[in-house]
Image (cartoon, each protein chain N blue to C red):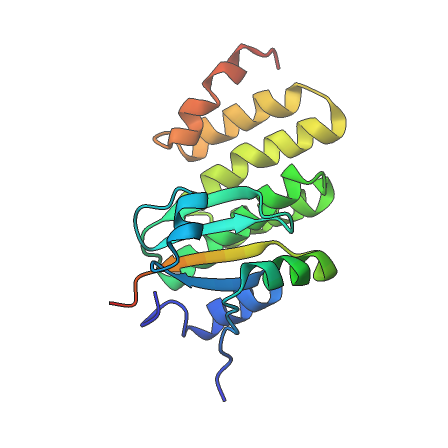
Length: 33
Length: 152
């Protein structure tokens, strides 16, 4: 099975995870249309 | 991005290992306004406090995505005083993606990282010489132009 990116949709949660994992956040603004 | 670049296995692996990935639709006007985003796709690299360290607008091929965001992660590491990590990432971009635009940016900031470690301005002069030789038409070479005044 192919690896897929597990995108979060909550920036506050991402910041908490980034702090724990000592990683930067990649924030992608996209237009689904 | 969602059709070609993100499904690419190398991109998925790279982003998953190196970042906490977040996607926001343009309907989130509060965040669009907070980060002054007016066009898509816009990709930002943030730290855990939400501070922006890198911004890219537009579409990327898989190789360009990896080269650009390896450089972006290195910029974040440089900004947060993880100088050895930054150096290693810049060197990896230059070694693995020597023909990509990101390699010129990585060369510029590798010089900055070397200067920050050793406080030796020769690192900046060497960076200018390297950029002029390998990327004569890059904007990063123009931005390094004043380093030519530093003696060898």
